[in-house]
Image (cartoon, rainbow, N blue to C red; front, side):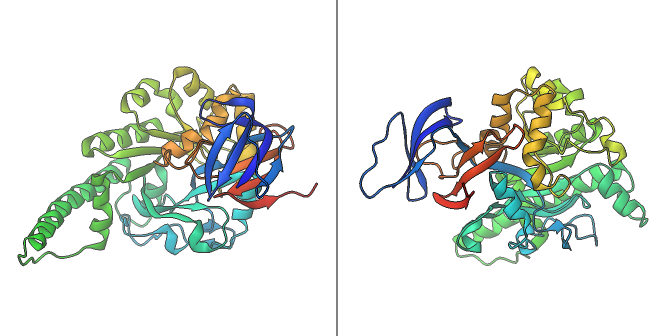
Length: 386
């Protein structure tokens, strides 16, 4: 057993900056108590004077798939590609995973870009591990889709649909209707096989992937502008989707709509320039506005847009513009886990959850904040030299 002693714990499970000990065994959190007495065979880490938090979670990024060394995030040969899988393109040796680890980020959701209406599936990964397979949590965890300027511009300039927002929404709906009909045929096929009957069912990789949206698979829709967010919410309601709005830049303009829909909302990237028309109304105080209104959300760097080196500094800037410290910690831990449907496994330090733990040399959202020790699944994956 490994015991972290004397740390100031933020557990995201009812403990906020109190002195607690944490015991780790077999890759899981075993105990969280005021005083844990280690046995003679136990390994002890003295965290006196240090902050101890859950590993941070990046719920939307493109690490190892879109970066300076490769551009594998968008299959720009057609706007509807739900059959693609980010896991097939990720460079696990990309140095950006090391940068994530150095920012205390232990879990990342890596997915396709936003050039297509439907771009493929996200994979959930740990940022370090003994083997590549050990790092993979879920090979296919969520479907990536996009509205707004990116698919419209990508295909409009080729003289193809979509060239308008109307075209984007129509193609999205059309694909969902096809997948719904395909799923009905698939279920009938499965029933025939179960009963020993013959079936003439024809397999379609794209529709087989997309039909999982009707079984609750998370659907992450890229939408910056308020009109695109509303379209995504409408589509989500029409088809009963487990919906996440990615970026949600103008969400601050439509608080009541966000509250009514009760989707996941992932805000960002916020810090940096206004690179295109649809982010002209980006605001550093948008997270603070949502917090005050009682809207639950989390945060993303959209790395490579904000490099992983900027994960901590983005949060610090948002706190300077009104985001409270406690909500900031929630956004990068338990709320991010919820937004990925992983809250039963990650996001807090409590018995039974994965032992992804960071011991901070200095507080993360203050100048110079950096980890001292990072554990993933109970194993030390990063350690600074003192």
